[in-house]
Each structure stands twice: as structure tokens, then as C-alpha cells.
Image (tube, rainbow over the protein chains, first blue to last red):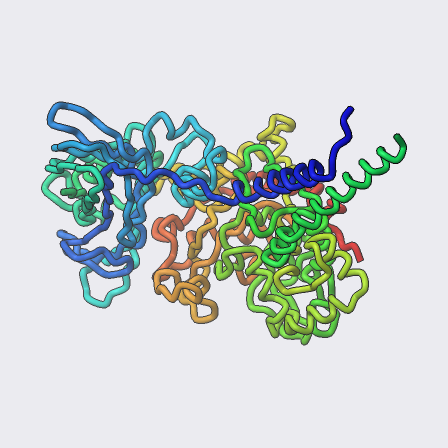
Length: 259
Length: 372
């Protein structure tokens, strides 16, 4: 065996130091994801009451002349899809919980192309409503126990799709206390609805598009089709008043505008 | 040959020394950047019990055996109070579900609090703390009682000095955090770690869920009342005669709370304590308080944010009444329709069920006991 020279030792030492200390540097370097050039779409969710931005606690007037105050307005939005002229359908968002108390946005990537329609599920789709234990989701997921706070009933009952709560004064007297509560908690698979919209969008690479989605809150109770009189029909948790929950979601499906 | 071997060993030793010296510089820089060296402590392998959601443990305060043990000592440490007479545990007694049997807790000066001491259980899953939710993390929550004049009435500066002067603590901080420095941040981190592992998951309710135990008929009836919509069906055919508890005390996550804030109809006005309003300054939050967990509810009398009810019977009578109307009373209180209208039998059944939430292994767990 040939003796190892001092120079060889120094070379070996140098190589070991280089290898040993180089590793850290590599680990510290954050991998940079390639910037996507796909079109970006920002959905801007907001709510209005008779054309003015919804303000929780503000007193509005219903078409029956009741004074009404909204205290909670939340809804699950799911399976947002775009439809192209040649019948291609693309899902760009699976599920989100929107609190309409304040304007909020969701940003998604969309495919390049021309789209003439959009749809949005209102509620939690059947395949994930009751079949999955919410404790299995990470806490930041909208269907997790924490992410769904106040929107999950209990085992086997699934999620509350939409919450609409507040209280009324049926006398319509300015300044009178609003003492009569209303609460609509819709849920269960048969109350899942889809809102459909006509759009005209030509999504191009590296561009960003905004789509305002506005909930017209007054439409949840008013309108020519089956108006809901809050003095008569004011409470449903779905299971205790399924008929009212269904009337409510039927109106909800036509209470959104998107363009 | 021997000389050659010695030569080789010497050179290898030199290489190793050079390597250690060369790489130590990086470590020293890390040490400087990160005052808490958790890697020197032993990781605590926390696992959520069955049917519980994952617990979010802050990345800057990982659970370690040493941190938890330090937290236990500090939780029970009277030197945190100005006159060394009260610890956190003084108002959170194990036999009372880590709550206070008195309506209000008495501070070190004799001053009385204004809200009932909240039970400490499964706090790692909570999203806010205090009855009004003003603290968003456990670490943040722990900051308050030490300096509150109606509680420990101390300054953090003094508390830290007193802890640092106790010879048992600097080594414990060293084991938990990598150096013996006693700081406010480290004290709160250690106590928060201790509170995170205070998990109750062995009540009869838990065992029943796991198929290890069965409810009695009364408990079963009580459970069904708990999860059934309220209201007298004779008043409104859509009412289902249940106790309607689950809307706020939901048990999807096994915690019997929705972590939200409600006005459950205790008062017509809120001058005495506006509750959540003090945090949000939103009039819609007046008179609202955090939904407490019902775990160990049998042990945590008195009840409500102001401890006004001594017995579970009184609590149920309150909900049965429908509550007192006010500008923010929860729509689910049946105050407009005559309350829940529960029979005496139903009330008794409901209490039988609530008692299945008692977990004596939790309150007697030596890991949570006073080590001093």
C-alpha cells in the first residue's frame, strides 16, 4: 500500500469541507416554482341590499315594509366552472366559504380561451358533504372543523350550506327595536343548487381578469317568485322546516349576479 | 508501521477538528438568529385523540418534554404573583375541571374578578381565549393574568426576576430552550405547551363514541334531546321538542363548542358586561360571550360568564325559559315561542347525558398536578 502524502491529506480535507458545508447551502435555497403564465381570474365576492353595499347591523326595509337587520350572511361556494362555446367545461375552484359580511376575493388560474358561461355551486357537493369526517382536513381547509366554524352541524348531518340571520321590526316604525329574529340555515344534499351566469371572457396568457360576483340579499326573501314573509316564515335549520329551507335555496340560486 | 498508523490517526484527528471548527461558524450564526434552541430538547410526539381534529401547534413553539415540564412548574408557580401567593392553578383547580368553584376569583389583593374562571381543557383546539375572545393564541392569553391588578398584580419584569432567582429554573429553561435565560416569551411558551397537552378524551362520551362503553337509557335519551331541534311541537308543528343544544355546543370535533360568540339571553341590557363588544366595538356583539366547552361541565360550577347559575338544573331552566329578549339575543333562543318547554324527565335525562362528559382521568392526571 502506497503511503498517503501530506498533499493528498490536504486535498482530502478540502474536499470533505467543501462537500460537508456545501450541503447546507443547497438546503437553504428555497426552490423557486416556475411562474405560471396561465390567465388569472379574481372573483370579487360582495353583497348588496337594494343596491347598497351590505352592512351587517344596518337597518333596511323589506318589500312588506318591515325593518330588517342582517347579522350573518355566509355561504359555501363550490365547483366554479367556465363553459366555452364549444362545450368545454373547466372547473377552476372546488370549494370556498364566503362571508358576505365583507367583500372578499378568490384568485384562480383559468385556461386560455373564450368562455361564454359560468356556474357556481351553492353549498357543499354531495360527495364531500356527509361522507368525509371534517376532522381529517387540515385546519385551514374550508371544510375542516376550524375552517367551517359555525357551518357544520354534527356527525352525519353534513354542512350548513348557507346562513342568513338577522332580526326584524314588523311595525316598520323608525327607531323601534328589532325584536323578531329570523334564521335560515340551509343544508342537506337535496338543497344544493347551482347559479348559472352568461359571461363573455377571452382569457389570454399572462393576463388577469376580475369577475364580480354580487349577492343581492333582498332577493333571498323578496321578488315575484315565492316571496318569503319573515313574519310567517322566519326559522329553518333545514331538518325542522325542510320546506322553508328549500324555498330559501331556490331563491338563493337566483340572487347572484356575475359578469 | 506503528509510526505510520500514529501519523494517519493524527492527520485524521486534525481533519475532524478542522471540520468541526469550519462548520461551527454556521451553527453559531443559527444560534444567534434563533434564541430558542428547541432541538436541544426532546420532541413530544403529540397525537390528536380519535375523532379530534388536528391541533395547530405554533412552529415557533414546538412541544417538547422539557418545555411541557417547565410549563407545569410555571403554571403552578406562585412566584409569578406579586406577593408569591397565587399561581395560575390557584383559580384553575383540577377537582373543579381546572376552574374556580367561586363565582368570581379573588386576586392577591382581595380584589374580585368580574367573570367566572374558564375551565382549562382541550385548549389547543380553541381559536380564541377568555370569555370575550380577546386573545387569539395561548401564548398571548398567558400574558394577561400576571399583570392584571385584580389577579396576580405583578409586573412581568418582577416575575421574570423572581423566576430567574430560583435556582431550579435556569437549568430547566436551559433544557427546554437551549440557554438558561428566563424571558417573558419563554415563560408564555412553556405554559402554553403545558396547556396544549391538557387533553381530555376519556369521558364516558368518548368511550361510547369509541364503542368501549354504552349510554344508560337516560343518557341516551339526554343525548337525543341534545341533538334535537327545540320548541314545543304543540305550539309550532315544526318544533321537535328537543333541547337544541347542538347548534352552539356542536360535537363534530368532540369539543362541545362552536368556538363562536353568542348572546344566550341572560340579560335585557349589557351595561354590566358588554362581552365580545369590548373586543370588536361592534354593537352586534354586545352581550355575546364565547361558547364554552361542555367537557367536565359537571365539575365546573358555577356556570355562565358571570357564574350566576350554581347547578346544571338552573342552567337548563334558563334555556328552557327561552331567555330574556334583547337587541342581540341569539335567534335560536326560543324566547319568542315560549322556550323549550322541556318536561322534568327530559331535563333529568339531559343532565344525565351532560355528566357523561366528565373525565376523571383527566382531572386526576399526575402530569397536570402541582409539582411543587
